[in-house]
Amino acid sequence: MELLLLSNSSSDAGYLVHARDAIRELAGGRRRACFLPFAGVTRDWDTYEALVRDALAPAGIEVYSPHRLSAADCVRAVEAAELIVIGGGNTFRLLQCLRERRLLPVIARQVTAGAARYLGWSAGTNVACPTIRTTNDMPVADPGGLDALGLVPFQINPHYFNLVVPGFRGETRDQRLAEFTVLQPQMPVLGLPEGNWVRVCGDRMEMAGGHAARWFLGPEIVDISAGALSVPARSAAI
Image 1 (cartoon, rainbow, N blue to C red):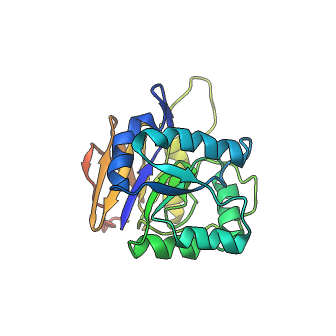
Image 2: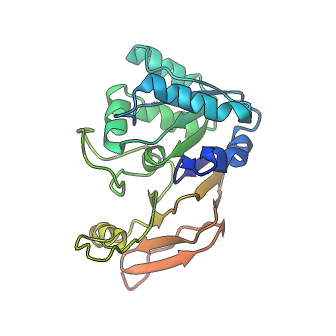
């Protein structure tokens, strides 16, 4: 199984430029990507497809989106894909569209079997997790359940930054994630900062990028640097 899960898509360098080498490595010579733009809400899907097409062209990857097709033809397009790409936007809307088109089991089957490789960022990273419960997004759509693809055995919180704004009385990101870990103490959450990503290649995982990431597991918080990634085990204290 081959995955590349980005925290974000855009940077000062441009759209997906910061991860271009990692994307090229994931593709491994695959030249055509099936892009699912369903997380787009304020950005229409045709525009989103064109944006990603232009961004991946320098990596030698041709992008097409099956969003104009019927649900059955969309399934067939994903079944035939060698590289599945899911972009960011609103995770609830994305999951709703994937479920309505019955794409969740198809994507999971194709990726876990090694028939297709998976590239996601932001919302596309969220849906690679067991659930979307650690997304930052508002529930603007009803996805009919929160279970997602389960391609990795832990949750990811993209765009992670525990910013404390003077005068702000709402919860910090750490406090929000603590709410999840109190209720789900056996499920690890990886806070993945901007510019970082997780690469999965078979049984090996690594985290890359210029910032420390943070594991949350029950009451435990552990900061980690780039390198080999191992999922923390539940401690006896939890």
